[in-house]
Length: 168
Image (cartoon, rainbow, N blue to C red; front, side):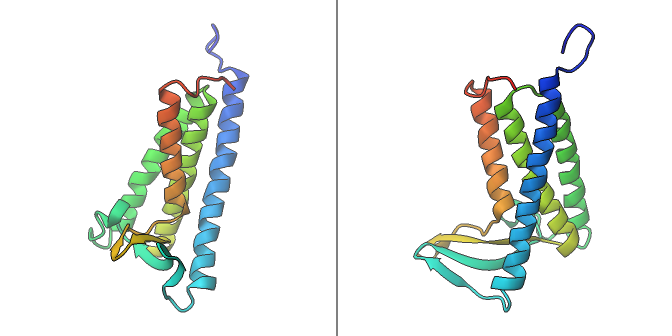
């Protein structure tokens, strides 16, 4: 900020770009879930892709790894409200940041979380379809939003340790 308290133009540009990135990620996530549900998984089945990877159809009513999946009929609303509050805080952070790596990380988290929020409110659960495994041990199924959220957190960590100090 300058002496008048005005936000630098670069910060506003990062916010706008961050919103566009988040919207594109949410759109891509929701599109991939729709394609999986209506094209590949009609009828639901397991599609082997590689010796360690399947396409499946799982509806996760909880959060990561199915935690809190049994919170009852209010679960989707409670979990969505919590996610909306977190996205709101992340948007405030995005508005204030001037670091491009940090802005990109926040945008990825916001986009992924937004895709999962819309999915949860629409279906009462988050649609997961990526199934990685070794022998009979399966990692919990996940989706594109989860990938973007994870990558966003990685960007924030990298940015915080000094690799993302460039200004936009």
